Image 1 (cartoon, one colour):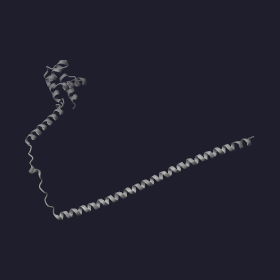
Image 2 (cartoon, one colour):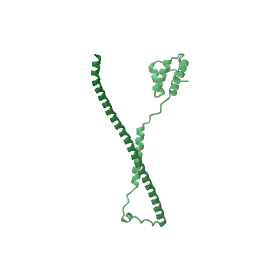
Image 3 (cartoon, one colour):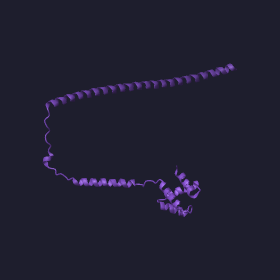
Image 4 (cartoon, helix red, strand yellow):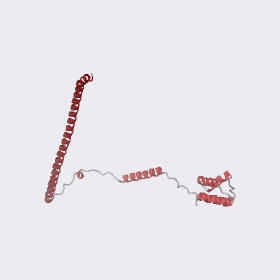
Length: 197
């Protein structure tokens, strides 16, 4: 059952009449009120319902209780600032516990490294040489791929140049044909004039 339906039913019981607008009006007054007493005072000021009746008072208190209330708004910025401030204070307290250490000449000298086993040295040399062989193979492979790529680019460029030359020859040939046609017209027109007479 919706809130407006409940309000409408209660108005019928209390006042023997109900109206959609009256139930909406009372519901909105309850929404805007911060307490039951404030709601009762607002209804009293409107002179719509006699609030001295006990049934009306209990209805208004039930209505105010049924209205959903929003949770109090929490200022997120203020909480974040407070947490940040607490973290800073904790960091300051932590820093106060630490003290500077005096640097002495004896501590500055590092102990000599422990002697390395000859067997380990040989294994390192083998692994170094095998990794160098792999690096050399990779380098040779890369050079080969680079050369193949440059060869493909050269072939592509040659094909493009051939097409350009062919297009140039086509223009020259077309110009030659146009010139021959113009000469033919010049020689044919006088013959046609003579024949037509």
